[in-house]
Image (cartoon, rainbow, N blue to C red):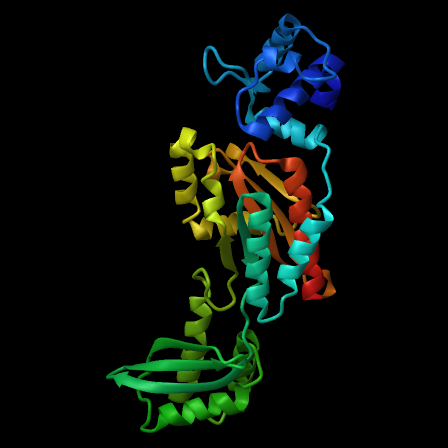
Length: 351
């Protein structure tokens, strides 16, 4: 299939490019008189109006007000990004700022959050990152009685994290079984991940090797299952965590003219689980992904764009996604390489 860019005349391509670049630079509609005054174009205002009318009929430009100039449509922005944009690599200062924040030490979660904050500040967008799923190595278990039929299951990870969940007690549980079961779990399952612990327990119970009666064995299974089931919730064990930084960047000099769009975008940013799903869809991409406006249902109301790139861990496996959210008029040529560089920096950190 022939590219729409190739089908355009040289004059139409130049006019279209100038309209898009001017709009992305200042967020304002572009008129024919303004374009005719730009250096190097050498086209009369009347000719420019005719070209812009043709581009509007093709769905590439829009007319926000009767007397205003044109702005690129989402279709036009997609055409520009895919076929005409000349990306500029991050400057040495920008690269140094990202690398410094990523490499400042401390827990990995802090480094990821710092990278997101740096990306947000440099791009003037909201920075987002999908943190790798937490899969703690288990160190100690315990059960605390709460009352008839219930106990508090306590899990302590090797990293010092503590998780508490309420679990129903199986019928016929003998006296002292809570302490004995907790000791058994700590002794037999310490040093394993949750998935590994469940697999070992299932194998030992099936082979009859577990030194537990039926009721205590069921309690162990319930104690592990309650954490596994909790992983279905955002931020639960084994689930990715979404970090958002720099929402204030979205309230820029142009926000006063479009407060409703900004209000909608800030509301959309509260839908953490939906954003996590969107970022997760970029995990299989080989390069930076760009979602413009209504191309993604979540941000269709606010008319916002998402730029996201996967980052990798050991053995080249994708473990998370980093990116930005901003208005559709953001500087794609500058921000896309910046997101890509941040993903590369995180990959180096993870490996």
